[in-house]
Amino acid sequence: MNKESFKSNLRELSSKLLFRKKSAGFVRRHQRYEVNFASNILMQGRTVPIPGIINEISLGGVRMRPATTYLLQREDEVASVQIGEVYYPCQIKNTGPDGYGIRLSRQIDEDLVDEIVREFGTKAAAA
Image 1 (tube, rainbow, N blue to C red):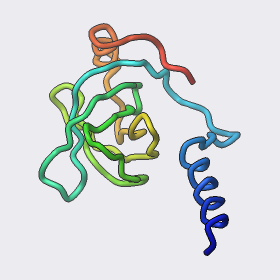
Image 2: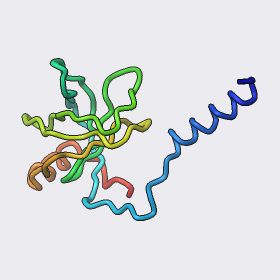
Image 3: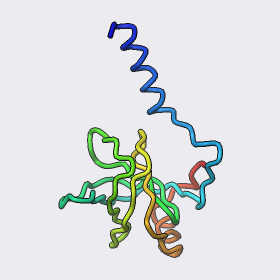
């Protein structure tokens, strides 16, 4: 592979990773809220949780930025994420510069989301 071909491939890969668009039929089910609170994620098969910050929350999922230097591509990995005192089973659906997009296996109680948004919220997240 020559230098120009390598640069072209690198640019294409970078644009795919950084500027992915949602599919045309994608519709978000729950309102997202910007929040900032400490949490942990425990990857399936691991014994030590990874600390991080949850920066968005909804009834059905969260966006979490692990406190690591690098974000590993972890799409479709099974894990558990801590929200309050409870670990919720989940699946990582995407990896982006802001962290992991995580879908919970069961919804968070609406009262808990309201409490978290009151205590740690900043504003409603963009769609």
